[in-house]
Length: 363
Length: 276
Image (cartoon, rainbow over all chains, first blue to last red; front, side, top):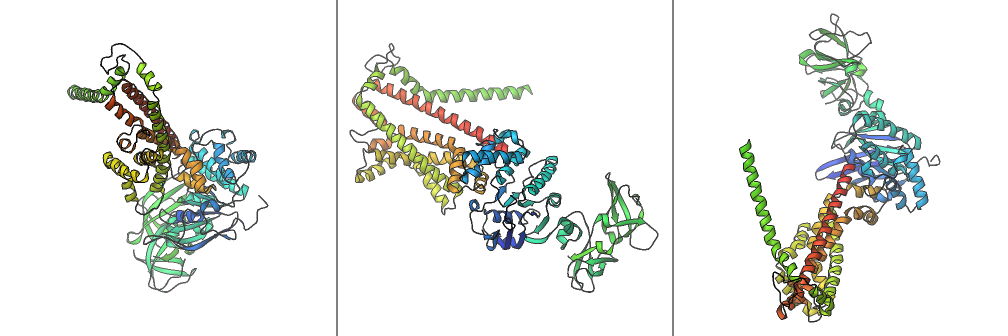
């Protein structure tokens, strides 16, 4: 598989639009997935992530735009001509075939002889660590085992690209985490391009090289997990990835991305922040500040103050519920064992943050 | 607590009694025909005075009976195959297809069940007469295909609704085209439904009497038509023997169909277990 051409596994989506009646399920989405890259399509339900995947798979045809796999345009090719691997949300194994027959099925469809079929199916089964299960029927396997068989069936013909539609959502939490790591390992091992749809941000952040965040059919941001968390480009991304505090206010002067700004808060007072997008003067803005970036100091010195309403201990951290000026509700997270000030409910505290950590977006 | 319970039980017993009474009432004529068929006398009588299989022997030795039986069997097999193939395609089109006027097609499929058979029989006779199809195997096969079609379509529709359509997508993603997806995935999984549909179709054709009465001619006739004629000319106990065998055959076919349906449901459940 090392012989595979460096561009063969590239997937390009250009200006994809898909309408269902008056609704744009996918609204002008363009993205490129590099060969051997693991891309997660992340978004709430109705964000268009599955429609994009199904358009790449060939089960949906777009109203506008093009889809390329490698150098080849496949926008209108039927699904069975795209040579992609596909793993569905439900396991979709053929119940009347044995596990081995399931895995050999794509090889059979490609006209590969019985002996080679069996050999390659056994090898694929070993890759997903189910070597002994070949003669069983799918119904005799557990959910996790079935999904592994489905993965084996999708990679046995060495497709350039593997598409996965929420493949782990039917599994329980522990098994899901185990499978996340396993899929990641498998992907590195065989060097296949993976496009993985999920609504679970943790899953996307832990598995993917890059994550495309979608909302209402629009691509909000495409970037490495760290960029999405630390430098979200839209208020949606800031709110969707991880936990965040939002403070609303107004800006008196226009700002360019990265500019330090002073926002007059609706709840009263002013707040130092950094523009995350181009912000025109007089517009309403939303400032996002992560709970772990909000520092809680003993009262007495100068600066914005708040009152602790609740302190929730969770072992590795304590979450403080705070009521700031004008009733603004905030959360702060204090890591355990860092020797930081841990106030009690009812206590007044002073708040501080790095200006770069408070990111302002158009509201 | 005991009173409503007792009340409930009395009600249930009454219901059971009524159900058995209706069943016996429905079965009685059929049950009487069997003993009548083994009586040794030349005239049909009940209860039989003795036991003899001579009327069964008579049936097997009479070429007229055998010819009618074979003709019925031929027409039944052809009608069953045609109705199953056409009905399956129709059911697939209704479930998967995007054909315009689905509702109208569905209504047309039910047609042969709703339209009185006697009206259909007259209509078919008039058309077949023109086309010289009366008394021909082709004519019977066509007529019985039409009559059996609704039963096939509904049986296959039920099988398709139970079938997980996502499996077809999986097959497509594995590189199978539409035909091979049907051949390797859809067909094996709905096959028990198709077999029971074909059995149904065969039975419908085999004991269909009204249309057959109209489109038979003197030497090409089906078994039910031959039985009608026999009643008119000589009420021999052979008739009872034939009726008994016909009933037995139908019961066997229905049991077979039922067993198949059960196995299909077991399979469907096994398939459902593979999902979340």
